[in-house]
Image (cartoon, rainbow, N blue to C red; front, side, top):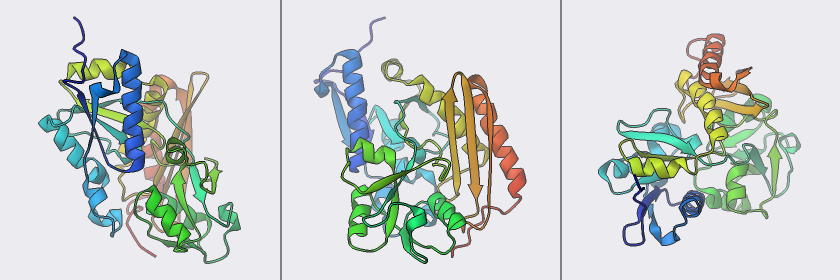
Length: 316
């Protein structure tokens, strides 16, 4: 059966958040689909959707809910037929999708590391005692305080450009962003130092773009299969199983990273108390096909080690 391809007259609607990074990811998706099927860009329409997480920028994420903050409105539009597919930063995605939706396409993964951003310092060790650090990430906050309990961590909400302006205004000495976002936006001029994953394990699925579709949309399924990156999918299967096993959300300091080497998958995981006072980390290696099982097993190991009440929030 011939695939019913979109056209400028009947374009495929790509849903996305409106930040510069989200738009860059949507444009990358459009470019890959256009190339795969030799279609003009006009055969695709990018539809910007404002999510709850975008609307409420004056309160910490933990106060307004979990990971669905950046996806709910987009998924509602997809279920209603207002859009055909949705492009997401995978580190924002809940491990379960609403009934009727599937998330099974991933683009090639970018640099997974965190970036240390500062106009005057080049790394965490350089920061003076009691320095002010800005971040909205509970994971980064907990990892920082675990290593440097003397630091003063303040809330830093907003998109990449907003956070950089706060830094220029002297609100904090440094902040942290994902290397992937900086690379995708071509922001080579930002004063950054990549932090090795041995020093700061990244968020689960950091650097990965996922594309969501309706489960019954066979045209979208066939088109997305042409741009799916198998290795990214294999790595995320392990990482997201680890996250699911921990019942992770934006309210929980969890880090995880799967890497592939010669057919062997290495999965590292870390859980921390929100105030950084305690952390537990471990890793597993095994065949790629066992990735999801390894994720579940590693989650169980760390949960047992951490004990009940480990993730209870106690702000400094």
